[in-house]
Image 1: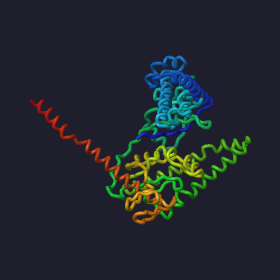
Image 2: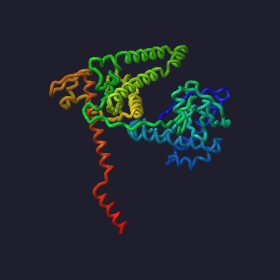
Image 3: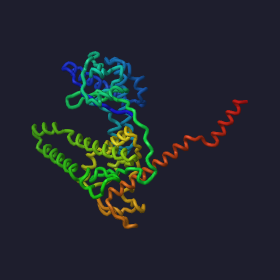
Image 4: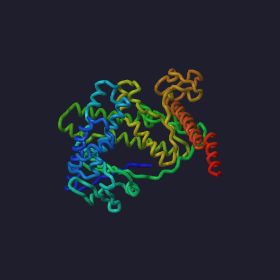
Length: 412
């Protein structure tokens, strides 16, 4: 599996100036190229390389950095087209859609720049890197990282991004880490750990005690902390003085770091529980949830400020490292269906926390009931995928007959 290792560079003042100049020049050329690409019909990597490589090379970049600038622009336009196609920028013909489609992609002056092994080489033993810059090859640039990151860098493979953030330079390196083959979970109702994601309760699993759901990963310390940070940001923004702006600058990304830390704790707990009991993990596919659901005003901030996609990604890669299979299911009607009798009705959801089936009269915690439904869906999806894979691995009757005829002809 591929992982991203982030290490911090510790350059000298001269090295810092060279790295900064490199990002400024590369992104300035990228913006120039982007303006030309906006009027082109073909925007693939190959098309840009054929049409614009001589121009980029003439601006003073070496061969590989010039290619990476063109690829960065091509990838940006590919991502923009995907957003337009998927409706992330409004419907086709709307003012927002038109504004995005008719405006060239712009890059920040210090946006990240990718490097390959020809432009950047690692000396892991001495904790230094050698990197290409616009003022020449720069050797002996020190970096610092944790011991476990140092060990992962030995298997580094692929591109490395030079990133500037908050006055410091970082390297985002791609490494290959071996992962065990996922062990098949027991083919029973309890063989899967269902995970229900929500607003009041960030994550509820089938192992959680319904009596303790109101204080764990939920409206307790997590939500209180988020509300406190939001209130402080609002107060500082309302003041608007220089000291308030300095305080906001110090506190920026504080909510993001807090959410990332909580997601790491959640994902680690969920994967460890599944690995310890030999089960698989079933979770919801919440792609596009912000466009589908309608919420009260006080809940919109909670929904839009929490990284559910990040939590799913963390659970996925940690489960892959632990050899735990993961099934992503459709969350439709999981909160309205009774996990005991299967009856689906909107009226079953009495309140946010209470579920009472109108058919069998079973009652319980709504999120815990949804987690049980998700576990059952994960089991069925996994069984269907395994049977399809097993069926495709065996040749059909007509295929076996053709192979037998071929062998007969060759024998004759």
